[in-house]
Image (cartoon, rainbow, N blue to C red):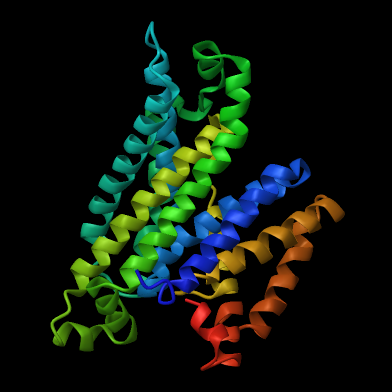
Length: 332
């Protein structure tokens, strides 16, 4: 294996593991690094589809929420048995169900909407969140408007110490695992035949279609992969939060933050969401601590200034600034 070819990926993984190491040895950093992991994972999942196709999907939070509900309901069902299975089995099943539900929903939505172009696709996905939210509240499934809570199930099935470990350390590691898997997926897709086809349709979809690229099939494949990972990220978030309510689960802010982070770091790049997630997460955390209640008022103009200074994202700016140098080769 030629490590030189993959040094950008190795550097990115090294940076991520360093964050994990800092979290382990400095307990005071656990909260902020936990937030950073989630933001980076969320934007990487979003970037996998939108960054490679330039099609904006406003329904991403529906896949994350469905993963939370699917994972939480699976845990609740398995732990209701007289002899609950091993914790590892429960977690694997919850991730599998969460990913499968998101995959099925993405296939159904994508099969219909992926043929639409540009703004029409974005408009078609706007109603996905509200439709799913109203379905859960209206039918009362998964607790309906009362929410789905798994805290007491975990404590009764195991013990309080295990519950604390699962909802703090293990949940963060699971979010980190989804983030690593997403990075690997983007990296492999970009370097594959699928990635070359996506690059062609991103530049000129009509020309790519004429040249023989199956634009609908390529977009559907990457859309389903991205949605499945979003569902698994939702399962990890459910394990950390142990409770889910429709207004919070389907908050559009998740999609908005994924867009902001991806654009801030560099849309369509592998390293962009990592840089954007670090900048956005640290900035929001510091403003929340310094100006509680007014953090969004201070955050919005700061992000506007950064978007004006870095119109192609921080990574895009660095690649242009250091074109042809080693720095550019390290920025995927």
